Amino acid sequence: MNLNEFLVNKKKPKGVRYTANKRNSNAVYSVNKIPMGPPPTPPLRKKSTPSSDLIWGKSHISVPNTTSSSAKKSRSSSKVSSEEPENKVIVALTEGRGGARCEVGIAAVDVTRPLIVLCQISDTQSYVNTLTKINIINPNEILVPTTFVDTFTENRLVTMVRKQFPKMKISGIPRSTFNKINGLETLSSLCVPGLNGILLILQHRYYALAAASALITHIQESLFIYYAKGTIKIEYQESEGYAVIDTSTADRLELVCSTKPAQANRYSSLFGILNHCCTKIGTRTLRSSILRPPCKVEYIEERLECVTELALNPEARLSIQALLQKVPNIDMILGIATILSIDPEKCSNRQLNYVLLLNSLLDMIAPLKDVISKLKMPFFVRLRKTLEDEGFEHIRKCIREMLSEGAHPAKGSQATMQRCFAIKCGINGLLDLIRKTYTERLNDLQVYTKQLSEKYGLPLTLSSNQTKGFHFVLPLKGQQKRTLKKSDLPDEFIEVQRLVGSFTMKTPELVNYSTRLDDIMTDILKISDV
Image (cartoon, rainbow, N blue to C red; front, side, top):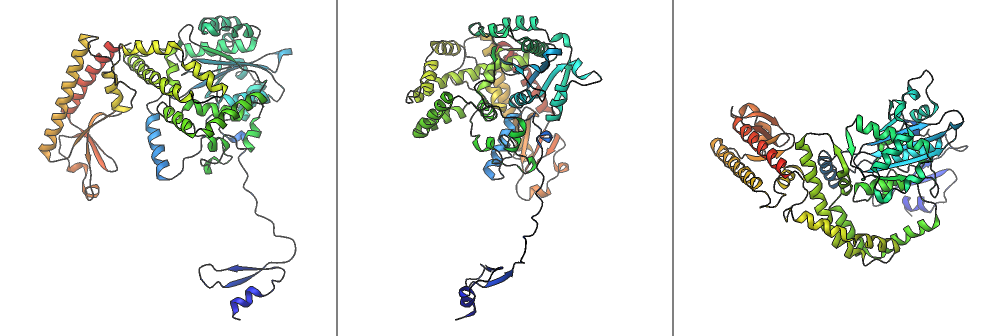
C-alpha cells in the first residue's frame, strides 16, 4: 500500500480535514488541522445601502453584462436614446390642514403621454402609503405648495419625502394654483369625451383635484406644454385590489434595484430578472406590477391563464415578440395630443415622425390580429375585438392617401430622408420641385466627395449625423493609426477630429453644400407640415 492509499483508507480523526491537490492526476492529500473549541468569528458582513440612500427617483435598471453582445446592445441603445424624448414624470402633492391632516392628494403625468393619474390617500403619520405611491410612480420632480417648504418649520410630509428620496427634486409652486374648482374645470375640458364618467368620482376628491390643477398649470406655464381638448385620459387609482409594499420592504427584497448599485448586474433584482419587455411602456408596467401586485384572485388567475397559454403556444409568443420589437417606442404616438411651443421646423419634424410611426403601427394590426386569433383566453378575445375596430382601417386609408408606400420611421440621417420623401409625389407640385432640387444638390455633394478623394489620394467617405451634419470620414488602417497625425492632412480640411479608428473633417466647400441642403430641407418640412 503506497502513501496515497494509506491516507485515503485511514480513518479520519476528529478535527482533521483532507484536501486534494487537483493539479496532479495522482491526488496527494494534505492534512489541515482545525482548532477545537468554538468556531472563529465570521467576518463582518458589508453593510447594505439603506433605502433612504438609494436614488429612488430614477429607475435602477441593472447594469448590462460585459459580454460583447450586451455591450454592443448597450452602445446601440445609447445612440437611439439621444434621438428619443426622455420620459419626464412630474407629481403634484398636497395635504389637508387641521382635521384633514394626512389626507394627501396626488396628481401625476408623464409629459410625453396624454394620461393623468390621480389619487387621494387617507394616510397615517408615517405617510407610508404616500411614499409607496411615489415609489411606484417613479417621478423626476415633485411639486408642492410653497408654504410647505418656505416656512420656518417644513411640512412633515415634505420632510418624509426628502428623507425617503434624498435625490428627488422638490419644487415649491404658489399655493393659489392648488385650486379644486379650477382643477375640475380643466379636467372636464381635457378629458376624452367617452371617459368623462370619472369626473363624477373626482368631484368629491378635493385634494386630488387641487393637485391636478397645480400640475396642469405648472406644465403649461413653466414647460409650455399644452394638451388639445378632449385628448387626455384621466385615471383615478385606489389601493383596493392591490397589495401595498412599502419602500423599505422593496429595498430589502431587492424588487426593482440592488442594495449595492455599484456591484449590480442584470440579475441583481427581481425586476432585472423578469425584464424581457420589448417596449418601454411594457418595462414601466412591469415595474409598477412588481411594486403594486394585484391581490384579487380573479385577476391573478386570468393573468396566469394568459401566461400559460402563451407558454403552450411558443409560435404565437415569438410572433408577438417579433412584432413588438419593431416598435419599442410604441407609446410615443400618444404624444401627438400635446401642443408644444417650439419653432415651426421642429414642429414639422415632430408631426412627420408621429405620422410615420402611426403608419407603421397600423400596418402591424393585421398580422397581430392573425396571431391573437389563435389564442382563446378572454383577455386575448377582448384584445382581438379591439383590433377589429373599423376606425383603424379608416385612419390607415386616410394616411395612405398622403404618404409614400415605403415610408417608415428611421434613425439618424435615414430619418431625415424618410421625412423628406414621406409625402407622395403629385400631392404638391412645389414640394416635388424642391425635393428634386435637394436630390440634385445631394448628388453634387457625392461627386465633390469623389473628386476630393482623387485629388489627395485619400479614401474619404461622406457621412452625416445630427451633431456634425455632413462631414468626411477618413478610416485608418494598421500603421496609420499610430503614424498619421492631424498635421499630415491637407490644409484644406477644417474641424478635424481624431477618433479611435478614423478622422472626421470638413472643408469650406462642404460647409456651403451643407448649408444649402439644410435650407432646402427646411422648405421641404414646411410644405410637408401635416
